[in-house]
Length: 358
Image 1 (cartoon, rainbow, N blue to C red):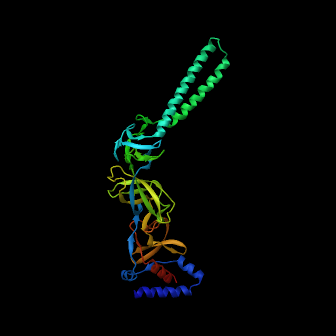
Image 2 (cartoon, rainbow, N blue to C red):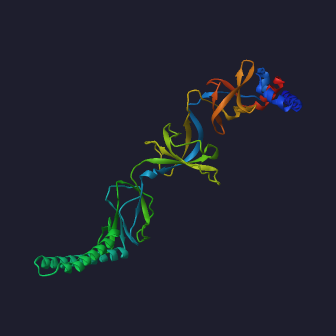
Image 3 (cartoon, rainbow, N blue to C red):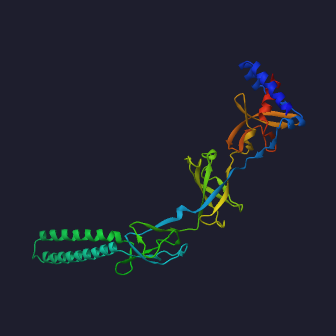
């Protein structure tokens, strides 16, 4: 420690004596730092091996398993009423057209009665028109007499359409009761209903998932927001990989994170609502990129450098940072996979570089 403080003290005095122009010049000529292994240990300098970038591991974060929203279909009820029968169980697989619920509804009955009345009126109007058409065809009546009868048919047809539209896809269960059926093959989830419960018009009474696909919902740390994009990988505990579907860039002020959604690989064994952890990774662009600790990066003369270990010390090398997180940086430059770089003690190395340059 005494050596460390001694070097820092010397560097501080040197900085105070250097003019601004000379300071820039010293940095531009930052030379190799000659240190023995014993001096390196005393200065607290640690090293790590530069790794091939490959699939860059960005973070290991908790995730919640949810159904794939692309397969979700809401099951709604068209009329207010009282639930009289539940034909299925939660998580039950159903076929298209299978009855799910039966509901007694006064509104449904009124609409059905109105439709029957409108159909009766339409039938009467059509009969009257047909009879008058026959008289016109036989020359016993003027053609103009058909106009009011045709208008009556059109009005009656409009009333039928008005009453029929809300009843399309509704299946009568007898009297004032109607049935809600599955619109497609799938699995019914997310319903908490009881017999005798009142349901409201357009109320979603359950959810139908048309596939077994699962997604992972992840809270991404703020320092990775904008760096992760759709198509990046996430790894699961069993060694399988999923793919990022979407990565929001809006940071929640409370959690300091943004929402990421990714596909869960089939056969993962994970279940809806389960909490797990995932490893987010990104494919590095280019074959010359390497991964080093973020702490290995330092600024010299306004440029980005690392200190590469040599036989007798450290050599400062200029690099370009391609990506960076709290833990590591992806760089391009003179550093190659397998090179040993300084991961801590860079302030001391920079100070010694300046002293050597002077």
